[in-house]
Amino acid sequence: MTHVTISNVRKVYHTAARGELLALSDVSFTARRGEFVSIVGPSGCGKSTLLYIVAGLLRASAGQVLVDGLPVDGPSPDRGVVLQNFSIFPWRTAINNVAYGLEMAGVARKERLEQARGYLDLVGLGEFASYYPRELSGGMKQRVAIAQMLACNPKIFLMDEPFGALDALTREVLQHQLLQLWERDRRTVLFVTHSIDEAVLLSDRIVIMGRRPGHIKQILDVDLPRPRNPEQVRVIPEFTRLRNFVWASIRDDSLNDGYSKTDAG
Amino acid sequence: MKDQRTLSGTEDTPALKPPPSGLTAFLIGLSRTRIVRAMFRYYPVWLLLAAWEAIARAGLVDPMFMPPFSAALRTTINELFGSGELLTHVGYSFARAGAGFGLAALVGITLGIFMGRLRAVESFVDPLISAIFPTPKLALFPLMMVLLGIGDASKVALVFLGCFFPIVINTYTGVKNVDEYFIWNARTKGANSRQVLLSVVFPAALPYIFAGLRVATSTAFLLTVASELIASNEGLGFIILYAQRSFNPELMFGAILLVATLGFAVDRLLLAVGRRLFSWQEQK
Image (cartoon, rainbow over all chains, first blue to last red; front, top):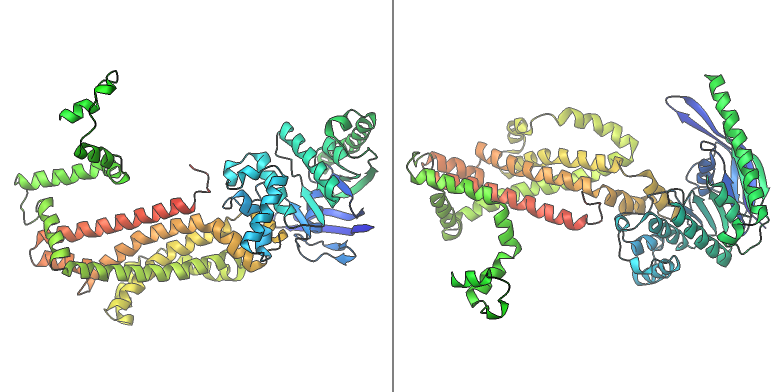
């Protein structure tokens, strides 16, 4: 049942200017197979750092991450990543961006373009196959990024504020698309966001983090019915209750942090 | 003239307009071609040449110092295609510039990429570049001649040195500027380090590399002609010096024009290739 185990992960950054900086202190939680877990917290709480450690892009200073019981040692196409922004390749057309992972795996040209077209259609960009990223809107670029990840057929989706830079309307459309996609394939998802609304809407569980150093404050179960439709879910009283709960938890932390900062001088 | 008037005639009588004659249609077609439009764009150059022609013909300057443009052009064409001798000299200069430039591109791009990606290479090569780059390369030519003789080798080596620096520095800068997120994205899609280099680092740095190549082409021509002026029995630099010494100003000016035209043509060619390659970039 357990798919991802994060146990006692600690991360120290060594910076020339400020010496050692403790970004994550003793973080542990697990994600079940097919579970949608969001990670929320104030900026600087190390939620992206944690995601990159799971991705294998950063190394934990202590502790470890297990996937299917095996320790993570470097990135793998099995753990698909969607980065916040500007991560698709501007010198490749939409379809060649989507086909990138297959190309690296040595899939023949015809075969990989065929598959890539399928994923582009899936995110509704079939007509834009030959477009370069500069010709696409922000929302379309992120959909290409999602299709690029899907094309590698990962077992786990690691998403770092994928909709963070989008306008409210586009964001809502993509949230809905992601929900439908997840209902279909039921992959394990770790989803970093600073939007509480988004976390409650999408997740089975929410990991609330605090900062200085980054740590887990609370893990919250979200028992909203599925399949979820954004418009319908948002009017359920339980949705509002959960959102207020998460907000209160994060706000306290932000305020306390503000004072401690002045104290520390 | 009659055709001209009907073509620009009023729009309320289109039915009366006779179809353009063969020659007019041809001229109109020609005026829309890219070559003709490009010719118009360079009208200041044509004005300059016309002024040269006029001043020389009016007898304002001694033709021994400055023959008319038309005379220089005629001599150049005769020497190029009549005897064909000038063409061999163009070949010599081109081969030297091309060999030095090609070698510099090969070594410069490779080394620049490794400098940008490997800390050890960077910390070793960077101080060397800083120390040698500001030295005028032409100052090293006498040394090159001592080491490699007065033949092609010393000239190619000089061109190589001159071209190498702009190429390696631009490549290095380009590689250093590659967004780390592109590399992360590639690695999470299963790319190994060789694939990251070829499929991300190289294309991302290519606009910088190209800018370096462009700077290097002008350096290549400069150093080739300069070295041929100093010590050579063939090449355009030699022709310029030879024409000056044998009181043949038409040929001297012709050879200078030839060098300028070749440099211009190669630069335009590179620009056109660059525009094709980088159509994915934001247009400025």
